[in-house]
Length: 99
Image (cartoon, rainbow, N blue to C red; front, side, top):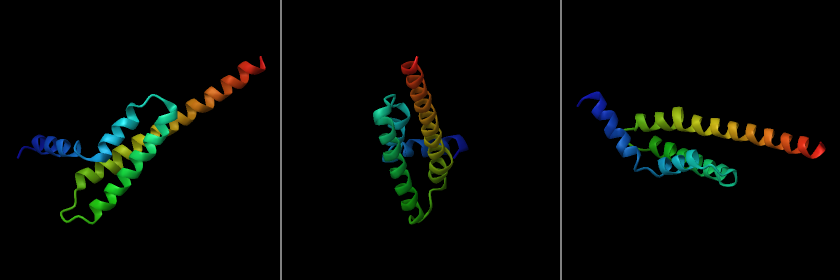
């Protein structure tokens, strides 16, 4: 099998995983009130999936790599950006109310 075909097959299988659906929902959520909850849900599902993969014969190294190296890091960055935005918003509200 051509390496690209193998990678595409792996990606298609990943789309069927619940953690992928939750991860996409977290990335696409633009509402602060729900975004952090979606990030937490996605992270919990990813951690559960990694634990399940550890006990599965014929380990799934590609899926584990996608979760650990890519998806969890993306969620962490999203959380950091959201925290930075919240700090700036709070500072702007304090500044505007003091003026």
